[in-house]
Length: 320
Length: 320
Image 1 (cartoon, each protein chain N blue to C red):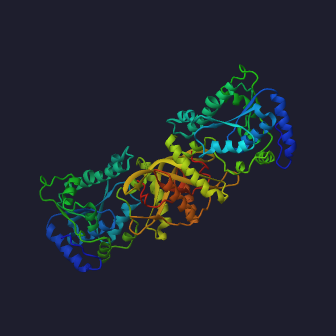
Image 2: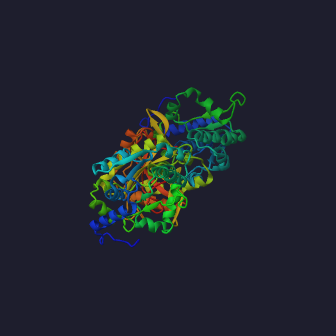
Image 3: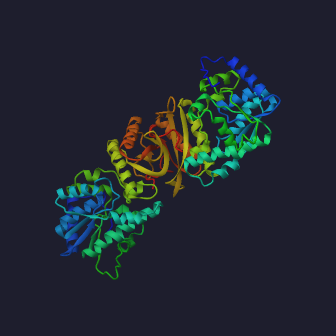
């Protein structure tokens, strides 16, 4: 069933009608549920599920408080225009509480994943009465986890659902034969707007991955503001990825003529084909200075801005 | 007595012979002592004192373990060529012990100052039997401390010498009427080699000011290596000042294919006239990339390098 369909082999109309039928047949008169993140994969699954089930698909968008400025409303708005109702679940407190006191990057990622599956989305699934879960898994995800056979079992475990006890839960993964380029083709054929495909990749733990040290509401506010500035300034560069990172180290600065230990923002902008290796984009000095000045002016507490000049490896794309 | 002598008014031959006589008259058959740091002011005072007193001036160079690579030997070698014996005092342990566990920048500076005056140089002065202390104070230092009248009293206090009890101690400050440009002219006339004037300014707490967080032997080793690379690469730029800063924040990196939380070096290179305001030097991308690669290759544990792009203010020249 996981036989690859390459983007060039792909007949989007046929793919869509086959998968709409499969979903319809599987779910029947029941209810299905899915979590929309605003990424390409979950967006395409949402549209496929909506075509198949209409109001019987419940699509939730989990606002974890770690997203880009205005992201939940932006994504829900795009889908409203396509006739799809997206329910925004405010789970900011759950995530912030889970992240409290955590500074280790791996623990941070784990806290975000756990909060998402077990505490928030798991509860919604269990309470919803839905027995069908739509997921945007693509072939590359399967390759990466290797343990492809155990994947569905893992999802139940992550959701806090014991498949023995809660007999009858089913995971539907309509994109499992595609890779990213194929998913994009299906998305276009489903009428998804280009905005959904144009945004640069964003890591799973979202802005929590852009903060060195503890994630707090105040620090999220700081990095969110800087992220807006960087993404606006660099979106025309065509770079592979760009980001602002809030450091924990304090550096000396001058605010209103007084010495003050302020915060530092690091900027990264990467040229890359496949994220496996990457080099810093050769941005002009004027762009860099302009960015530094805007961040200093707009983001409270920032006294210093740096630009990454090291390649990957030994650096990585993200800092956390 | 503190009437300013501007560089253009200055007659170096007259200045030198007058001050040599003054020092000779004051010290007589006694012994004088001075601490040489390798900076312009203390170098000029060393030469003046040597002319006046010969072997009756004891010049010590305190190796605090916080200096540039090879600095004590380099400075002592330059003076040996001029016929001046410089005694290198190994006080690395005193300074490292004093800095142990300190992360606050102000406390760090204080620990270095205290170690220098009270524990190390103070002890040397007290043990030496010298009652005359030659100091390279210049007019700008007096302006900056404002409390000019109390200055000499402060020096005794810093040295742990009670002027009441230890009657007879005298501070001699032959450069007190000059500013930096005048001092340089006197230095040239005294035959000091250009190397002593060419090096960029270095802060009082030396490499301790280039380390965010605790100063340890290992971290000093790291920043010392990076400093050699940066100073070699940027000495031809004509920039006002340039430096490497070791961050405390850990960032994700890849070493031999494994994820590893490594260290980051920040580079700063400043254009400035008077250090009051400064802007990052527009270094070419090739220079920046070359620097990053060399630091990554040569300095163990470094996975990331950034370049400062924020101006002063709100940044400051140094980070600590």
